[in-house]
Figure (tube, rainbow, N blue to C red):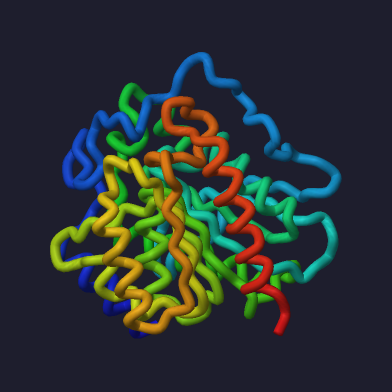
Length: 296
């Protein structure tokens, strides 16, 4: 708790936000070959990702926000239909928010035996669905301050751990892109996480907050996936993260995928998606979470 309070204070002092002004995100160019716009020709449902089925219980929820906050958190929960208790995972979405793709990934992980909670980090602005109806992309319409994201993730994790179908001592974190950065920062402040997975998380330092500098605080095990040709995340920053984790003796494995760019797991973005890298990274992610979140 002290670590979380200290990190939130540092974030507030630095004024850290992934988008300091509408239309501009530090470290995330407005237009980038690595972050293509969604194509109108993309399928509305991703093939191979399980939809709602008798084997899964899927709920759209409004759960309590951080202590003392007036807002509630929009959330998407997918879990095995059996009683459990199941290991729990908080999924931290990319800049697209609580959209169909991130819900697909939530269900896909739940089909592997996890209770997965996708917290909509745009909840303070009315949620992804409301923002998506506007003219601007959701990440420009409602930039997310890191201190708000960490507080909302904390409330989501606390809620998940209180559910009777979750084993509260077996919880982890999975984040993508913007959410990968938030996952890294969040893991550095929570001692109750047994596993953290980051897909191409933004590693750039902003203000006084450097997500790599405090990687020694990560509890449990760490797994990272990065693309060799990612134009947003330089390989030197990935190597710096690896070195910091090794120096701190954090049990960690960081993979770099040859020929893969940013957002290589996003099968709704043809220019970014790399099927071979995505399949291998997903296999490693599931194996890692099953190993690290199994009963002791």
